[in-house]
Length: 490
Ligand SMILES: [Zn+2]
Image (tube, rainbow, N blue to C red; front, side, top):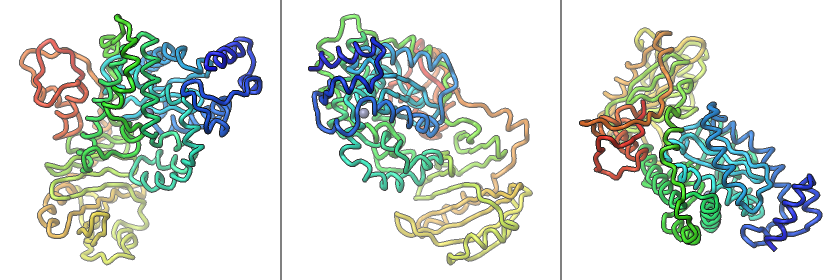
């Protein structure tokens, strides 16, 4: 049945028949990738294409848009084109896009629309690893898992996502509630197993080493651990836009899914480490400067022309809506922009009118008018003491700091909070213009260089070394060797 359907579809495509006509001709309901026929009535394969074509631009926009580099886009597309003929639906209008976001993920929309983030590209170390992500996504497309999810009433879960997205990026928040979010939600473990199995099969047939899938998965799992630690979350708990959240997989299950692919692996299977590293040399890494950049404990925003520094031990995270920093002892710093209504003092009074805020004071922060007040807070982890500071940036907007710590710990943290407030300063136009995006630099380790020194260009403070090891597939404690090729961030 698989063969006859493929033959019909290929024959029809060759004859120039539209896909809608093909479905009417075949009337077939079993999926050639999985053999299952359930849920297929929900949407036809040509319906998949229409859905994907409609929703894909929204998802691309929400994930930072297409990465503006034809060489990188062409390379990734080339890998996709090499795999696509070995799928069950080779006639789909396959589209491959590198997305301009540091988020680590990949997704596929029905009909063959595949997105891979530059955050994920930075972590992969070979063509086979990248092919494994694309193959896995092609597996989801060909097994038509999205249609299954919709058929199984995934719409009911939309509310959960809307709540969960509150602290994410503004574009992603806007996306929440649209149909496109369905495609960045979690697949089931069975669907993941199937996507791994199919992806491994496509890889092997296209001549890639399927072991690349295991290698990249190990890196992605470690990255999710480091990201959770940076956000002060329990190990392995990552936000819903991380690959490990939307594609829940374990190394054991992926290995099991790859059994057949490994057995048929060609002797000269391509790993492609050198061409891969050559392609991602110079890739933008981390935040785009126009959205503000984190440089160790300092946040710099060239467009708003401001900078501030958080206390030692705090780890900064830049989001579209706010910058947050978590520190020792449950200390939290959040900074965002707020419109001014009148001067800073009146704006602060108005914003805190419905709270038991007290101790209103005016201040001057490096010449900028400011106002502050204490306010008790209720958080999802219990009560906290808080301090709000507004600083007039001109142009009718203020920078708003919220400083918080658990009761009894605020006094100890307040010195650092005060330093943060008074570290706020304007950038000169020249300073703002000098801020450039960080880029990956693929280079050779020189004699005497250490992991600590090579990790210095990363923006993650005390997590720099952990990140360097993620980028370079290095186990904890392992040293670098002269002559070794590494990715550093400059
Ligand atoms: Zn998946």
